[in-house]
Amino acid sequence: MDAGDFDAGLGDKTMILKGSQRAGAANLSDHLMNERDNDHITLLELRGFISDNLGGALSEAYAISKATRCKQFMFSLSLNPPKDHVASEQDFLDAADRAEKALGLDAQPRAIIIHEKEGRRHAHVVWSRIDGENLKAINLPHFKRKLNALSRDLYLDHGWELPKGLQAGGGKSPLNFTLAEWQQAKRKGLDPREIKQVFQDAWKRSDNLKAFGNALAERGYFIAKGDRRGFVALDVQGKVYSIPKWTGIRAKEANDKFGSPQNLPSVSHVQGDLRGLVTDKLKDFIADIKSKHTRDTEPLNHEKIEMVALHRAERLRLNNGQLERQIKETKTRSDRLNKGVRGLFDWVSGKAKSTKKRNESEAYQCFSRDRDQRDDLVKDQMTDRQSLQKRFDAIRKTQIQDRRLLARDVSQFLRASERRSKTDAIRPRERKRGRGPDLTP
Image 1 (tube, helix red, strand yellow):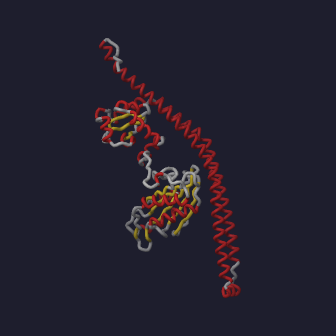
Image 2 (cartoon, rainbow, N blue to C red):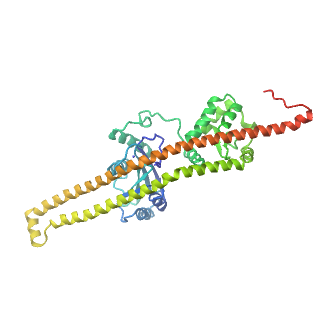
């Protein structure tokens, strides 16, 4: 079923199953129970642990692992449903059951945590890899391939349209990003697809190095000679991008088209020029637009905080009401079982057995009823949250356009500054010669 938290490169609508072996019980527990980054967190299941909280449960797994040589004693799995599907608790439980069977983690201690944010619902499952009886780690060969196959099965089982990434032969998108590319783009605050498109468009439109450099400069990127990576480009903040990586070509193709990068200025030289060109006024412009974007989203953030608080209160009332009802219903079922001589008679006559069966049936019906009530409340709340998220998305789209316009303005300023610098360098020589500059192309 992250990313919201995690992306396996199969598209927004893919039931992504992204897993990894890992250590760090305390860090993982803190991350999964972090309410600051999530609207809601539900600890759906703790199975096979003594502790009744996630931190204690993962600490138990770590303590048992100390009897082995295993360092990565946990297996962590994210379950991301399609963007337009609100998964139920049972959906997550079923996916977790199938995943652990496929991976060979049957009956291992596990925890399931549900996260909700930005109008989407996803889950994380954490298993202990340590076989408690034999005190050894369970091996997980080819788990990525197994999870990819399970993703495809889940799509087919739910009747969802199978995306190209999961079709036979797979139609892999040309715009896939490495983690390093994604993190670099996130630090700058731009979508990596936007950055990659800049480089690819410049490559397609350029026949030589000069044209390529001009095409990049129009969008605020400036080419240089990398220390060990050949052709690179720097943005106006001085950050370095490998041209072959972001253009999607091999280094040899760049060399064949542009020749050697040896005549280009070094990274440090370009960074020095950029520091001189990007004036305090431009920095003020950048700060102003960031401040404006913060002010624009502030009302929505307040609305989100109020909505999250309201939704949490509703869930708390439901949970408390269900707990109170569970206590009464449990007592009612318990009172049906007679004690003493009458209880002995019921046992001999078989009435006690019949009563127990009735109690078990009613207990399961009550459990299913409570689970369905929780799912119904979540779906209603998710409708409200998704409506709010659409407004967030609309304002973010406008803000992206603002950043593009600012990048254009910055680029124009830098190019004008570069022309002025060249003109200033020519004029003294021309004055000595007693004539004006030669402006012939």
